[in-house]
Image 1 (cartoon, rainbow, N blue to C red):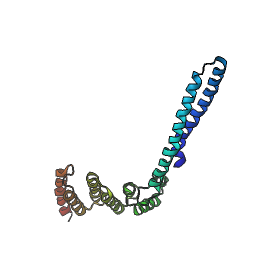
Image 2: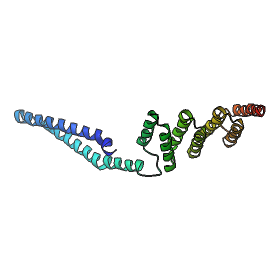
Image 3: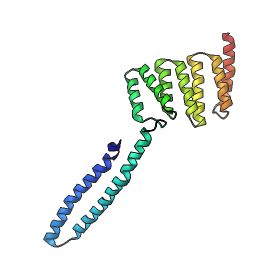
Length: 208
């Protein structure tokens, strides 16, 4: 991360210094031939600006970049790096679904702040593995970890949807929808969810 973060500024600094070197040599030549030293003065001002930028780069930007890297990748309780999730997504691309699920679960267990891993595991279990209980577990964990009530309600609605559409367990669906409405009374389409509970109750009793 350290080298990649600074490659752009360092390359720019090297290019500007090379250009200024050429311009300085030309300014000296012009001064010697014409006794006009204004271009050389401009070149010296340019070198002063480059010097200030170099100090800022190596004393401020570089240490800051290192500190940011430590915050992102060293703490076990922080959100895992994008690279870690990228590696797991590569497994998914290769069709290694079970292995990817284990990796996402390890990320969830190892980092209480990793909400993305919960979402990814839920999607993987639901769409590829058809492991609906695992999808339910992943989305429940996402609901616990999310700090936003609106997103929490969204995860709870996903759980209810899995019970209704995938597991065909209308009794559990009713329980989940009731819990959702009790915990998130301001959820959008609350009236429609209440009507759905009544519909599911009729279906549930008919099935019995």
